[in-house]
Amino acid sequence: MIQICKQNNWKYIFNLNDRLRTVLKDFNDYIECFNDCSVQNYFLDNGYKYKNHKFNIIKFTEIKKKKTTNFHYITNLNVNNSNIKEIVCLGRNRWKIENQGFYNQKHRTFDIKHLNSRNDIALKNHYFFIQIAHTIRQLLELGNLLTKSLKLKIKEVSRILLYNLTSLPSDLNNLETNFQLRFDD
Image (cartoon, rainbow, N blue to C red; front, side, top):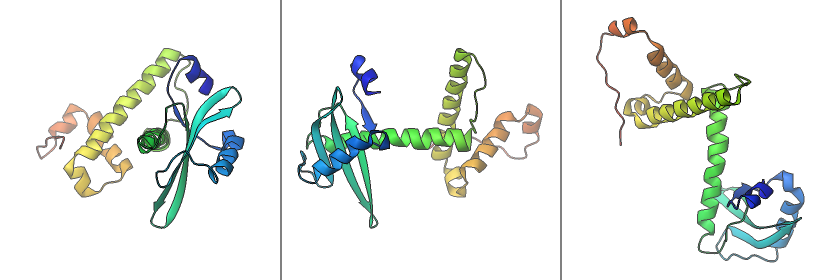
């Protein structure tokens, strides 16, 4: 991935995980003695060299309710004391998109399990529609006061939405109440 970003002149922030085990170990050993950052709970090694790549390594130690969690990132962005918090925030948000959004689409909300076609364009279109549906669902879930006040679970909201979206006009005529769907600010 680093090579692809380099070839396309792209900026990146990647989670540093076990795939680069030696880099993570070297960084953790180095950071005990030398830290290029003076912001509390943030650690930085500017200009780390790995094979034919050069990048910056960041570690953020989050302490919440007596629980300590370490987050490690590599990036080709220029990192210093004034922007390290923002870069870590960008890395955390990217992780949330991948691990919460995509995870929910695959295992909870849309139950994506296998390819639905062998045609590349059909696959892209299918996933594009899933993204649209997920966005609409999030807007309905998070923007509707009734949903919030009922404290429904994600699957319950999905079932209600699916029923309402797949109801035949004759089903809608049998409803005894009028309703409106509103998006709250």
